[in-house]
Length: 225
Image (cartoon, rainbow, N blue to C red; front, side):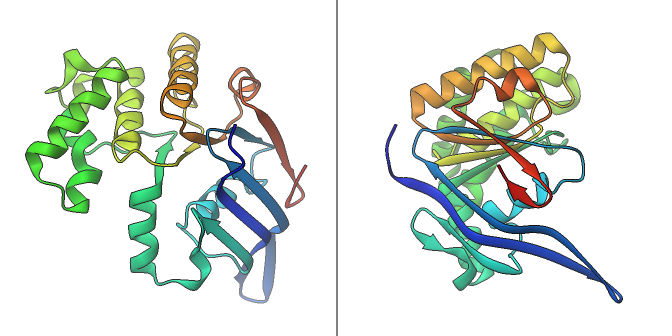
């Protein structure tokens, strides 16, 4: 495992205000994620796990503290630059696949490259390569509605990996899957981590998945333990 930090946060805090009420979700969170490392974040529902993942991915800005992605402090750059950094350094997978229903599997997987301005033929070739790696080579031209739950999530993983990100942030990636497909996805994540040296930060309630990670961190009362 490399000592290179892909993501680092220091003294991270997030609070929300609702009228006169202030709700502290996270406070004094410190975390380092190294190259090729697999980290699970667990905790009760409502503990702020998804909020933390959004902050680590630059999808939200902390109330206090800083988040550094691939050496760049994202709290000090514009939203446009944050979006470019997300597209170049990170991949995202959620409990619900968020595939675009009107596009095929290969078109969905190629989308991040297309948004980057990659030529369509090159984006499609790269997407096909990654889809083969996740076992979707027979379903390239199917629409999401024609896929099983497991196939949709594998397509979502291909979309997250097509840009060759340094780290994939996954929020309950097996939450909608049965035990068989969840286990297949566990194996896929381990294989992708070992093959591509991609880091994974996974928010999960799945104990079996959590215990296949290098580290398991618990978020409780707004802090990591």
